Length: 335
Image (tube, rainbow, N blue to C red; front, side):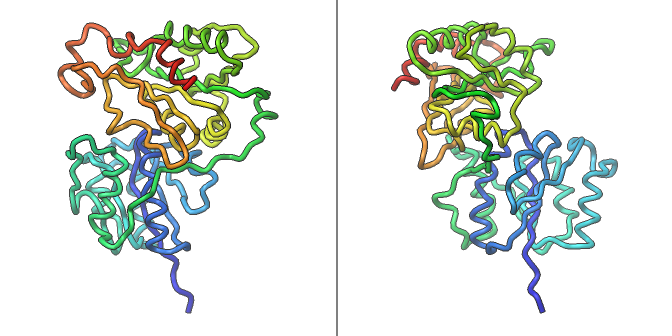
């Protein structure tokens, strides 16, 4: 009689950076359960491409994740299917309450994370990658969680042919997807003029080309850079996540604010310059791995980090980001 292959359901329905950081649990789980392990991963519709080339992960798209369970057809469908084919384990990597009842009702031999055991995020300056590993370690006591990093499998495209880039290049990610929303402060963003000045300095003082990346919802903002130079390649809205991985993997360096793009760079690029001010680099910056260099660009002001605190509303302008000069970023690039 053939032994049934182990199946796990992972619940992590966050943004791009959250989801990439959570992939750190995959390889420890495979090492623990065996190579035949299959993983279903509950994710947002726009992140399904993240797992396109990963043979051991099957994404389950969940629309309207904030809807209450009783009227959320997506959640109810997953629960119903679990009774037809129960999981060996359900691992809830969410820290909020919106998936508690969902996780409770899924048919599974083992339940990890909320609501069964809350693993608090309150360790000082603990990166969320380490917190995710603590969640699985809370149940699987014998699992090895040392030496693992988030990962992403790229598309292995011929990016030179695909995008017409032949010179060595630097990737910049001027992420500011909510810039056109009413009352949006863009706390984590770097001013457009700073990006524009950095591009000009790179062109003037290096031989590198520049590749600009971003999502479709960031295109309007990035178009405002308005730099006409044959060494500048604007790929905003043109790359899937696996293709973005390949573009970053083959770059000399990636410059990014605290965004999903920075976390793609953290698993792909040999060198990442992460621009931080209001947010904590120690807790949410790109995690990196043993093969790359992550440089924190941060003025380290006394009031920083202030994100998700009352202090941020008292700041008349994002001084910690505005005063982070293009010259300083260029120095990091040339290091």
